[in-house]
Amino acid sequence: MIIGITGNIGAGKSTFSQFLKVKGFKVLNADDLAKGALRKGEPAYEPVVSAFGKEILAEDGEIDKRKLADIVFSDKEALKKLTSITHPMVKQKIISSAKSKEPIFVEAAVLIESGWYKVVDKVVVVFAYRGQRYLRASKRFTLRDVIRRDRLQLPYNEKLKFADFLVCNTGTFLELKTQVDLLVEDILSGRSRGI
Image (tube, rainbow, N blue to C red; front, side, top):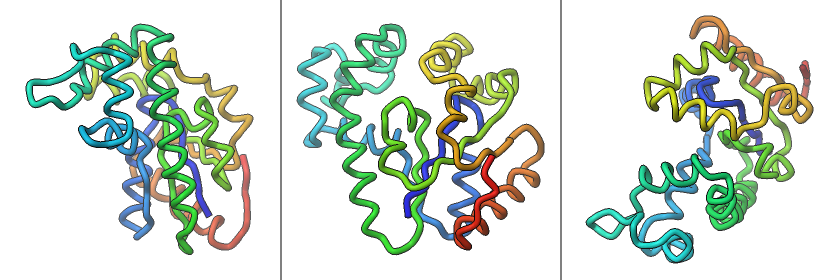
């Protein structure tokens, strides 16, 4: 079984995933899979350099992820061009993980937007209020970048249409951990409290 975890920027998907890892579950991170595909010698490297030019390269010849992010998060067409290259590769990695007998979780901010929700068995949406999300995400990105990324993601009223489970990350770590425990219990037992 493959369970997708999604939610908008700063919702707490990574914290949720960390709790799952502590419990011994395998969690794939779609961003990490996409970044891995961009490394020199990997399948996306040449097509991305060809599409965006050598200006995106660092001194060592690797793709500078920050330069690339600056381009694609300020231009929807550029983002479409990048995702048309990387998303099929990430999707294939997700599908190949289904061979495992144990449940596998896939953390992906764009699980719905990319269509990857079609290859997972269940969808978990992690929710937090916009103010909470922006505050959390601004520890990693500038507020301007947070807002730009958030605008490219589906609003929650759309994401919830695809959800099998809703996790509200609006409280404490302990409350979030309790929800992880309940979710795992439901998934392993075949129950569904739904949303």
